[in-house]
Image (spheres, one colour):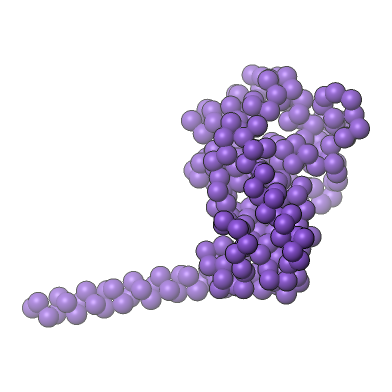
Length: 250
């Protein structure tokens, strides 16, 4: 009887191991970028800093920029969120071969919750890096459940990322005083991330409009720290709409 029990356990463990291995293989096939975040060296990335991995084809100049940007980002994020809670894995491609290997697609950068970030050759720019790290910081403060539930609308998330990264494409750096908007507040700003990205392809001012809305609200509610206070309140279970509208938002 004891031998039969042992055999059953062996087969059960074998089956569990096969299932886990099969699941890992499925992830690697379906989302190689996610698999690369788990095992960077498996996809040819080399460590160039703590939790920072680069395509071997990356120039030394680009590596210096990336290390500096990632090292300086937490201080900038802390101005808005009170503290830097995220410690993301960062994968950076510098060649088409690398981008193809992880099926990176056309996006300059892509944040995966608060866990990891991948950058394309076109995303090796401090503005893009900080933009994506802002998404990850917001997700870290919000928590997995609230992030997955879409508790903070996409336009607010994107607007904050534009502001923290100080993106000159969407903010007026020549404007005197606040709010430095390149476009007005009027017009739709989608709540859903996919709808936002789809609309952004057809409507270039969308990021500017989202940033302007956040800037106008932020400047009326105490500046950059207002962002962290709102996100932390949502993480505690309060509704974004109630918090935002009570402070003069749209």
